[in-house]
Length: 379
Image (tube, rainbow, N blue to C red; front, side, top):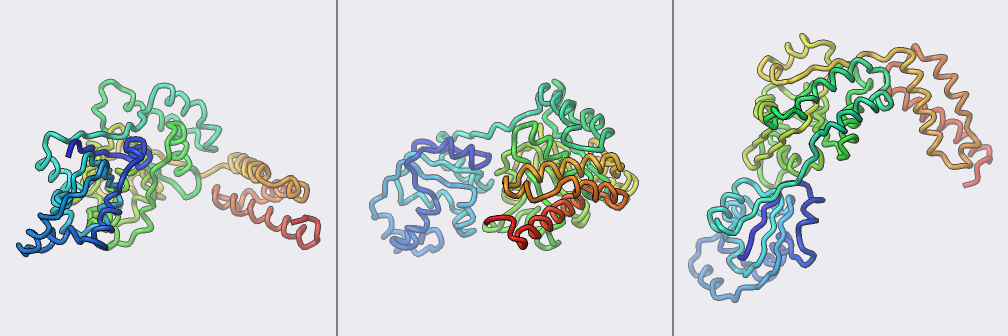
């Protein structure tokens, strides 16, 4: 072995690092299972089998690649004896993306002088980005003027020279569909990265336990997903939905920017962590989440219910955006002014963006279907 490169970060960055000529760990395991069964000695202690395999001529490989998902394809025993996998091979260069802690430690002990660690360069909030958030906020997030100042105050420490790389951790709270998730998307867009988003309401307790604290290597987990993220803007939607027993997993993350489970360690330095909930005030949040996690949030930002003027702005924006995406033929067959008037007349019955978007889609759909049935749109 000439060199081992351990890379922490998303596949997009890993692909730029690895050579074109390669064999993946998954391919190697599949070939050996099918042909030579070279890995038998990892799982069996039969001395005769081991001796037979020692006399097999080693196969030369220029570059062996292990992606994040590669570790899911080998057994727990193989993970424990990972360094032994390569005994039947003469490998020049080994590249590993986001290896479990156990594998990294094995390689460091076996090949201490051959290892290089590389990490993905996540974008940090710059002064220009900060000013752009201030400038563009009202164009993207309608009806939440009070949020902008609180948000900017919350983000400022990331630009400070005194910042010790601790993430900024915020709780966005208020009713559904009034801009919490869109604000997280907006921040990520300004930083030029794809938002990392997890919907915590989708997990059941048993499933969530192994996902958060780590299970077998064959299972997906929060830590590995974090390692593969492309953004340092983290959105934990409906953070209040899982049982409070899971909050302890986030203590170190919120305090220091480090997340650890039984298999992985992730650094989220200088990140922006946004949690959302539908609670109505801070007292309610503290009561339901408890003090240990409550006091680890840097800021609580309330999103107010949308005023009628804000709802009308949103109606106009959604109708206009939908119209732009229609074909020329479809544009001739719809009456967007009629749709806007109907929604304006009923604005007091509307409450959030999702509701309005669904109604706008419904109105456009009805008009277009009617025209098709009348034979006025040629397919």
